[in-house]
Length: 128
Image (cartoon, rainbow, N blue to C red; front, side, top):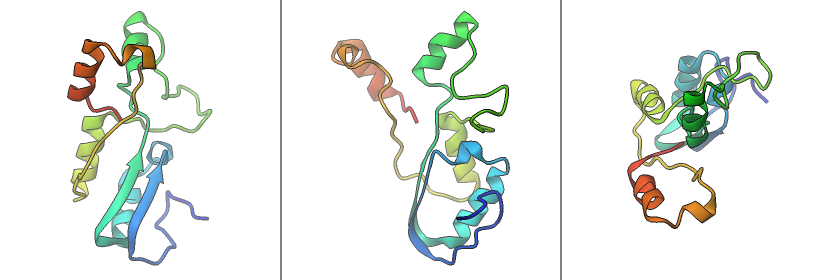
């Protein structure tokens, strides 16, 4: 167990580090990524996931004046940061991490994914 806002107590190097649904809970994300770099083996993999503030649900909600899903105005589930694809890529590159692959989850109901428009949309849009 470790306080991820502090430098890690783990000794590396590790070939693979996973941080699924973690970064959105950390206030000092720069320190977090620096700590990861210190224990990640050169050429190793960081597997990271986070909610996408630009997900399809929010693209529908926000224009209608509804509050975005995932971000909090009160600290309830402790999301202190939300990213979109461009922001996350920029942040990771800022710390010298090389992006090898990005993919996301399909947010449309399955019955809509077999029509022409969603297939085109899926191929041109990266969702985290």
